Length: 412
Image 1: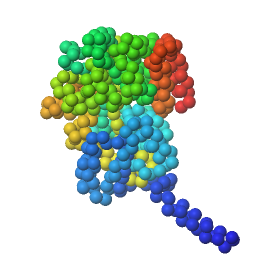
Image 2: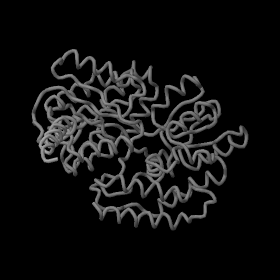
Image 3: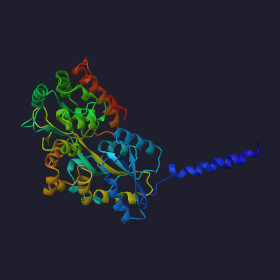
Image 4: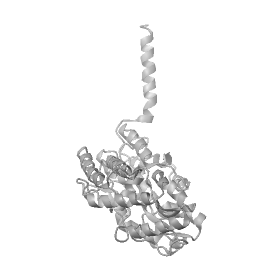
């Protein structure tokens, strides 16, 4: 038994050394150049690889490998957080949801970037703001997003500009046509947080993310509007299980007169409905409403061994030429302002002027390193009110939501 001990130790040491490259906890070689990986959500339109191929052909010693994460943003975040908490260098460039900037920066998972390296002055200003935290640039905008109201032009002469108009038109169409009037994303997940934020006007936290400024009266009004739709039937109860994809399918299949969704649904709707639909800004309490700002920013992992290449790649990937391809080949909203004013692109994507207007007027979600917990509080609170038999008081939930959000801020 004693003779076998040295052999056993040697085997264990060898096994430990063999595992090191996959989970390197050593210090990163900051400023280094070499092969990198790009971790981002699943590419559902297959447009990414050709863009990566162009980089790889021009940089054979600094090739980039695409690591596709799950399509759902919460699952993407979970995988990234697990990797970064382990101080692994597996990811070099990270495709971050715009609401993760504060969390990833506060935890030291990404590095600050020099503003002068990127043409930020040519990007849409609200989009740039999502990449800034505590006066530092932590990522570079790659795609943007804003919620739009899709509506059937064969059923509606003029799109609604207020909640009251949306309710009136939805009720009329539901009774006449027997189809749903309106739906958004009402499953209890991040999408419900977004829909509530839009209904309430986006004012939930102070700009510095330290105080809850949500007004219970506005929260109650938003909850009453959504609950009323479900009670009266112009918001179909099936919408309580809708995420973006379910909403998209329901609208393009003719089951809804109005739908709140991101721009990605425009192409499929066009293919199915032709000229029988259009998009406009979301309605609000007294006029055009405020969308929640979405999108993806590109950041550099603090544990990357090739941070110089990572930053050069981000510069390439967010260039004007590639941004044009992001729109024309991937159907994602670009971040360069001038692309929204290009006549040729507007002809191909008629929603660009409305989308630009929506982005410029959009409100960011709460800026907080504890955003994930805040989102859970909002989504679970709203879900209580929307669930039949609608027993929860909107007054009570609106007040308790504010208290729970304030408590969540204390745990940062």
